[in-house]
Length: 301
Image 1 (cartoon, rainbow, N blue to C red):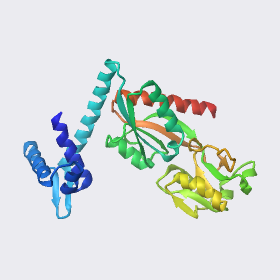
Image 2: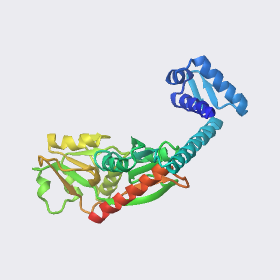
Image 3: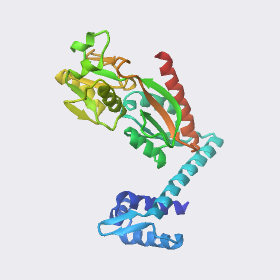
């Protein structure tokens, strides 16, 4: 598989935008890397990089070539995992792009459960916003995506969905903690901490606020769900997340309450893959386990 090494070099150059930096990344001299790329371009019959004053970037031919390499690498990984299955080794690698809400509790539990049965399988977990997760599938950087309210769904093949209401995260002694029904307008009257606009929770909040003639005006806007959970204890502010990423602390300091469905209907947590792609065995089996776990969550309500 020596030819795959050249493709790895090309991918590194594309990622770094510089022959020199890519050479350092791949433990080569810049001149050796440049010669290898030039030789490949001669054999390929076309240049694949634009040489710029400040570095290099893929041209359209290079973009096509890199996409081909990533698809080939994915197919090779699938065949390798199938061969390992034939040998009874149950090896493989699973890469998954996920929303932050899945990182603290759901995915660690699912990965550990899978590895108990298949200890030879390794994992890469890429925490991404919803648009980035879909891009990871398209570029073959991730086999699976588990995201809340995906953006495009053009090349996204849905495997399973789980409804998730938007929850308010608050201190246990917050005035709204005792309300029988939590309305969005009441939440917006208090200081609040919100996810940035790249996230599905924020998308639902902004849309619902516009419907009632209001807007979010967060005292803190952040990409960190951990920061949201911790900040609400400092300013008696309100945070917003989905329940799959929440777990009540042992000291009882936090409360989680769903915003009324009259204001914000539940959004969709979606497990998916690249449309038309045949997944490696390990990834396909893990997808089946995740789908079953999401079904169990739905049954529990």
